[in-house]
Image (cartoon, rainbow, N blue to C red; front, side, top):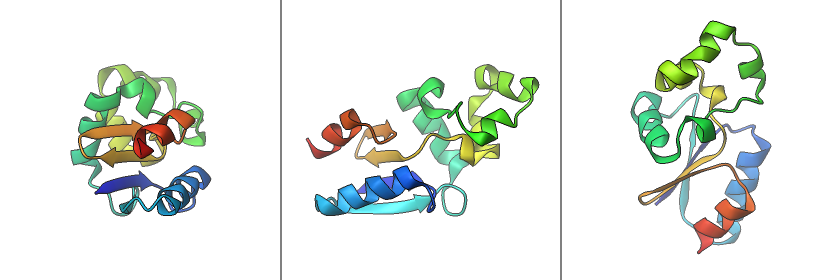
Length: 113
């Protein structure tokens, strides 16, 4: 089962879900703010892809953080992401043992291949 973690109003997440549906890939959409167990999932994602790939430093949430909060990227990225789910780059897609972030051409090819 493919799991897509994102936000319901995120355009990139919507594109990913539409593409998965068009390719008949069975999936489950999980809203990272309302439905996801981030305390459980974030450490797994950090292990799989790393903080640099998982943290959206271009987001409004990131721009709203002070320097001390931003410094937590190095010291405790999991707690920072659990406290601020909108810092997570979207979508995060789990397919079996594979975890990918975003909806780039490479991600699309990896999921369909």
